[in-house]
View 1 (cartoon, rainbow, N blue to C red):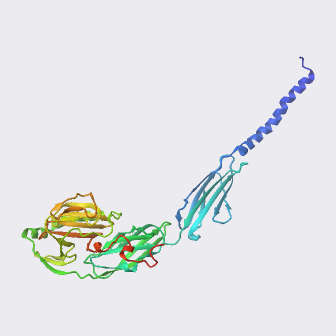
View 2 (tube, helix red, strand yellow; view 1 turned 90 degrees about the horizontal axis):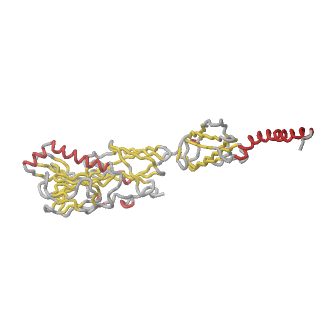
View 3 (cartoon, rainbow, N blue to C red; view 1 turned 60 degrees about the vertical axis):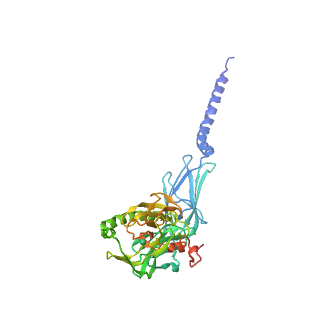
Length: 421
Ligand SMILES: [Zn+2]
């Protein structure tokens, strides 16, 4: 077929028309495409605020909102029930925003953040942060009955707060006190040994407690040390060899260094390893009570820092309570000795044994046989010198057989507001 002149004209038109239509369509496509097809929401990050955390004072947040395609349309924040506030943003630049939480009421609050892009879908990303504001320091209470204690006794401190704590420390007799959580909510406990030689007076106990938001409460209590009448008398005649050991200070120092090391392990043990009341560790006659002021034929006069129970050599000696053996060896003055760590600063010792049946590091149960009674070391006859040390201070062990120091209720104490929330 031969083309006619008109064909030439009409042949140009079908090419030109699509081109003329396509150019704007392509241009439109470049605009519509990302806007219509984009289903990716903006990327949104917030630092300086974590969900369900406790805060105090003002909070400075860093907000980053980005949307690669087609870009960010709005960024709004909302605090509790207040109206949303639009934030000015510069793409990709982090925004610093201060939440004036110092003026917020204590309690739960919500912070929401929403970023919307410019697409037809109006893709959005929303983050909601429930959090707590606490601008009030914790209150600290100690049952008044627990604030006085006799010489040679154990001070059991029960500290109650009105909210959970992140940290609680104390100081008494220039020593740091560790408070340990109890089974009761917001109730902490600490034990201190009261030396038989502490003068009878009031001592300040400073407690510093920090709540979960970081508010610090400080309170000073007065601890009153009361007089304990210790028995006097008793003259101990040591053999010339034992007298030499007693007067050889280096032997005593050597023993005390080893014992001190063993007792320190109980201070570092935050778990309560013991359970309920302690038991008398052996059968026999009570020959010398704790605290008795005695004189030796060496001229030395001092309190007796243990409880003596006498019986024949070989009488079984049992662990007063559950614990970990921290010392099991022959000492100069204490003879064959065992020290048990019961945790939270509490140790018991068993001295002058004829045989030791445990090794250091071993775990023992209450009532488990740990050795046999004897007269090794500086002893005048077969007996057990049973000692108790709380935070490095010798105390009367009998008190722990009469009182269950484990819980507030079991020692017959009540807190001003009932003890439990
Ligand atoms: Zn003794």
